[in-house]
Image (cartoon, rainbow, N blue to C red):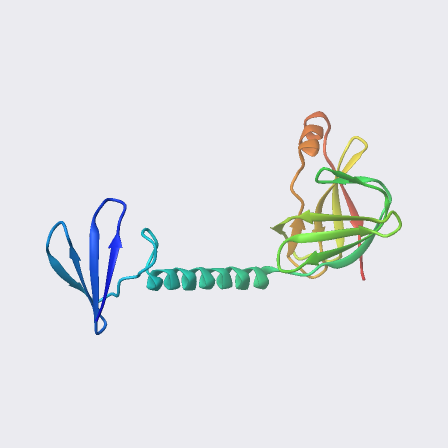
Length: 189
């Protein structure tokens, strides 16, 4: 039999005796005894018993695995190259004209855009969009006046594509100019 005394910030002092897996606790203020089937955690006041911590950890791991499985199931890989004859904006960056290779990174919606001639690499976060199954690899740009903004990326045989969120500059340009869609075909690497 082990006796442990714990002091709480509200000035209650508890004595706990562990007897063959059961726990008996006594409050010095109330002079009452009670029994509990759960063991008392001897951690700092305010922390959770180990059983609750383990359960929460298991739930979080299960939720993370479920999210990863659904992301992996809906994810597609992009590995294409395209020759873009004009400079264009992606997010807050302006990228020069040239030949670009586009690849997805990991399981998420992150894209890497590389222009080896200009030694430029841009990482872009995108969202998944859905349409009819694409018949060709293509990049869709929005054109406002003489400014181009990358909007969507589609790969052949997929009904899911990647959409680049509109930047503040594109939203501003949309108020002053009419939108025109420009489609460029891309090649498999």
